[in-house]
Image (cartoon, rainbow, N blue to C red):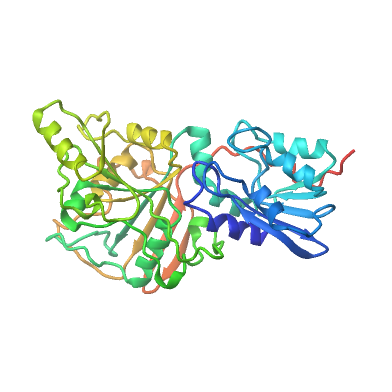
Length: 400
């Protein structure tokens, strides 16, 4: 199962809106096939693993898979039928599928066909890997991670606006590893104007990323694909379209795509700015505004969900972080803390917005983990719960 989890983690950022799943087939103690979910519309992990077995006999073998095999026709045939046809007699499933179309039906179909199924091994790790898919399929919105780097006193820049770099190279390398497996990355136009970031993925030495609490400590590996980083959709929240036409994210020279979300105020100025950005090849979409006149978080997340985005990394600035906390839309926090003090009344903090007025209403991380990234410290934890189906089938169920 550990190998199946590694395969699943390695496919993150490449399969949405499908879940990232890994599967391994074992016969007589030897791995004879393995696979991970391919890009959307292509094969799921189970048939990939079966096909990779080639001349090896799958009849009577055992499959370890990180998610319950599907039992319905979508863009691909049901994986349960591929498993049954292959003659696999024993299937170990890490967790049941949160998709209401499956949710135990895949396990039931396998058992109906005489396959022995065990559920639960590696369940915690599998659920961490598939948190984005689970949030998307149950709530129709992406899993939102608020990620920021700050000093010990919580500052993300000096009073003059200098922010590069608060954290060290190890932390920045980790951040690019996260981008490699996330569907979208979000910033506000203030970040674009101040820093002119590219928001791409840059992996050093072909290594995707190290073990990480964001995926429950599973070390991802993508054999043969280490030199092909995934570039998340770049989402810029820009109410009045202030993004300069010469900004890197709209230059047309970067890999991946940029989406600018603004609020159409019906003026000629909006229309002309929209036209100017469109000339760069950048997509601009108007979304409903909140009470502050800026893009409403719920509207933004709904639009992204409709486009198949299951996970998004909110990178700031503080106003954007604050808006998503205030809306109760943040699922997890990844805070990288540098061992430095910045100080100053005018130095911006990590989280803006309205905030809470009582400590009893503060956002508290569930079972936070602490990881060293060179001289810096990563604190990661979730804020929300996801409705997974109960794994009440946690023992081997011999066919009747």
